Length: 434
Ligand SMILES: [Zn+2]
Image (cartoon, rainbow, N blue to C red; front, side, top):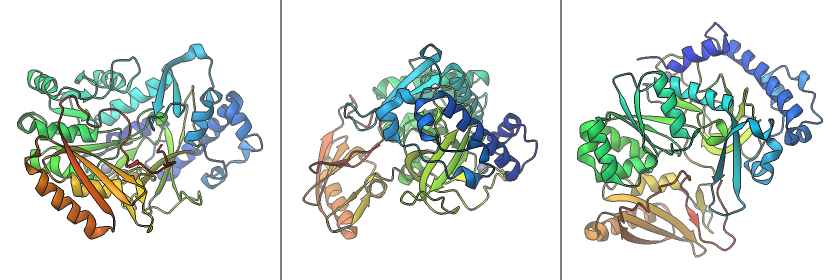
């Protein structure tokens, strides 16, 4: 088992010179204190927020836990208050609109140096799965300078790995041609898009693609199983979000959870209700703090993602932490009037196991009704699918279920943006995600 290349990278970058959690933690405390001083000095938001805190009194991680959280809503309301540099030093601005509602945008700012840090992480993170014999196709946005695809291409170029950045999947025929002409061996993309493509173009996928890196949204288990069994692919998961500087962690060859970018970010898992850290092995909300970020450092940022630190050592024997695969957004569930809960990931395991399903959407309404729309190549199998899916849902939850289907339009009504999937709330005054 090859050890995660992130370990050597982090040892060199932090100059801690020993494989010990204590040494890394000491480094992280120093960086946290630096981030706090920098943010308090330079940004209006943190100047207000940290006014009463004596930063120099922070000597341990538990001292740091007294610092208040930063929420996504704070960035939505006042993103420029987070800025620590002048406008001319900003190299890239990413506008995130997770809910689709205007006025709900988050703006995330990066300097050139911030983007270089991400390139450095991508460079070493990609070594988990690729070498110079690989040819990589990236199905993520990449046109703009500083976009995720652009940074990935720059990172792979540093390792002499050939990389084509295509952008999100829109035309499967075109992507099929690119794979054939360039003998692509590794695809990086959005989980549902990769599943969609593999089901539509299974012959080409099986012939060429040996490795897959899934990113930008949580990954249903059923999807990984299918890619592994059907195509004998190695399926790697990456965890990150724009606020982290795109990258947060990536799986090693053990494929058993992400090793984290611990030289650039400090991760915590907290109880979302009490805000207290949970023990390793317990699920909670992922929270992170950035080190050395120039434009927009974030301190104890609440991601809304649900995950846990693995209590076991990874079989690659790294001393880095392992975070078990993120299981989705904490809010990505429906609570019906009889207090039953359905999580999107539970629906995924039921619905996506049917190979005829290319994509689906789920919504719920006031009358405790789950409204599911399947995207199918054709309707031949619909009656059977409808019966089986309803039976499985009804055997677990007392809800009404309506299932319809629509043909695959090829213009990709599929989850084709970077927006994270969720169960759509049709109730009056329904909540929003993100
Ligand atoms: Zn490992």
